[in-house]
Image (cartoon, rainbow, N blue to C red; front, side, top):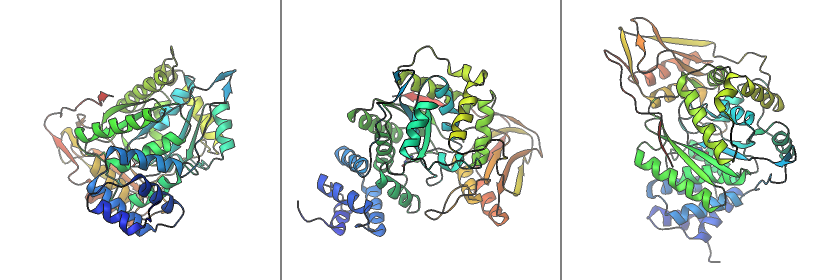
Length: 429
Ligand code: URA
């Protein structure tokens, strides 16, 4: 093998070259084991961000990240004597995107089993783990034995990737604080390394498009979707994707505990119509991908069986839903300057407000505030009366409120007519 060193690998990508398979394997292995320093990987990530990667480089980078850790295999597990229908879903990152929380119980109730390696917040977007950990006692640090037991007994486990793709865990945390999140090769390899390693037999991706997504244009999101679908199919995990709107936040909450509370409303048969619609659309895709016929996902929300599955999942992972969800002690309400209709609502402005309130991180490993977030009282198209509450902001740290209010300023309008919105589900690939 030729001699490899980090400065040469960085310079190759900085100058627009293609990294060899050997260079990719070496740098991922070296970073995982501490032989490549954070500052060297940061420089390489920025070079990848600026220069991109060829399809073969993305495939090798993803494979090297999978090979950095264990690959789970649950095909030996049986329920009622039958192999488990192992399927998962992953989103490329959105604002108010709490869909995993109601979706998992819906598909559990329909007979699927979901081994879900979930992530923490990244950039302006929230993470499923940060949200679920807002439930008092909930832990995502599960042993492999516990994941296997939950899959067999209740049909799902949500876990921190841990020993799966440990290279992604380190790179993900570094991207979060080095301005290198919004990169197609880095998103595709990050998502797919975890998903190929976690033991799902098929996969449904929710690829976000719009202002609150990492990739803003439909063309970029389509390319991301087709790259990830290609990676899944080439690695023996049949993969499909929905392209969904992320110009406005999903639902009426953005943050941690506020999103859990909204998910509980959905599981109780209510909740915002967009959250319900996307949950059911993704559930339909997951059940089809898992080969489960004849189940009605909507019925599981009406008859309470999805709520029962959520309770079982939370209890298995140490959570206590009888205790109150935390909510920030300091709050501020933004009111309507005049009557009309809620106009545009920029997902990025709302996301940055939630982040400033403490719902996300500015430093690697920093704790998030579970009770930080934004409640949206009026969504686009809804009538608004002068002086009525439009948003409530929550934080534990009152000094954070002015910066959060400044992010929200200019992210919304109240107009004379209701705006037209593009469909929630833009395409299916
Ligand atoms: N989800 C991930 O796991 N990684 C990304 O880069 C974006 C979303």
